[in-house]
Length: 364
Image (cartoon, rainbow, N blue to C red; front, side):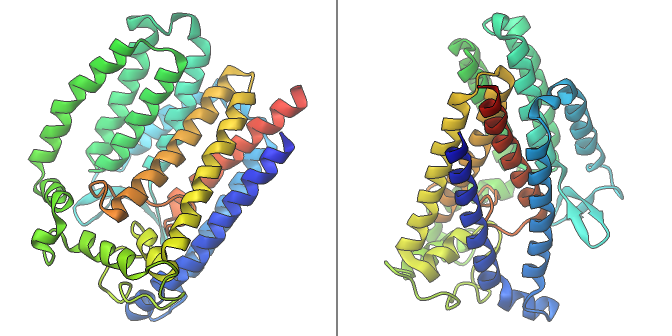
């Protein structure tokens, strides 16, 4: 167990270090142009990293089992924040979305807390209700109602990417817990019309689907971001154009240091750089799975499962979007993309995962 924890820590720190280097490389020109300080985003990222590492250490120091009695209250707190962020003059609106609280010079995104809260609640529920998990009313409906409430609140922000992520992780945890396939299939079947409605209702979502199907048809319009991302990845070749020498970060590729930082990695470090990142995430998932399999505590097992699924899914979606294999979702690349709330709570989740491994080692 100790070797697994050490290896997982090394992998996460490697991803964090890649993030530090690439955030500076991808954002320095933008930061100088807009903020008149080429270190602006890097300095903020390092502050978020310090907070995140502090929360990671705190999560490692406190027995994760102490979370279980408070899982419901943590979820309620997360839901209250999701409601408050939708209220004008309380939640901050930006580009038509209301997803953040502005606290001084920083923004806090409550949906990142809500994701961990939902995982903790689901882990607690599944660990207590294992004997009735196949029951539709007692073992399936309660977590689905919670999932529905949280998803409604996140989609109202609007944040369809996070909504889908929460739903997939919760359904995945229910599947692993032994829920009946026809129960899960029913939810998936009923979700399709709702998803289609949400896409059709919002013109910008329809534009994203059109861009995904053929970004080059309107490369200067709705397909601009995806085409620029593919240009960045393609121009990097095998070994890249060199660290710091990206052309796409020169105001061609929007969100170069956030959602599309994987594309800048591909341009500057080439196929070898993107493969290194993918391999690191694959190793992370493998190590996380080892920790989960060794957990003999149901709450720790399901909590770890949710964390690994959340981070693994987000990495796959981000890389898939950058390559044009998935429609644009707006999910950052864990540990690498610029973004305070995501980085902080992702590192806190890693602390919980390492804590699960540590407690299991002491119990064995």
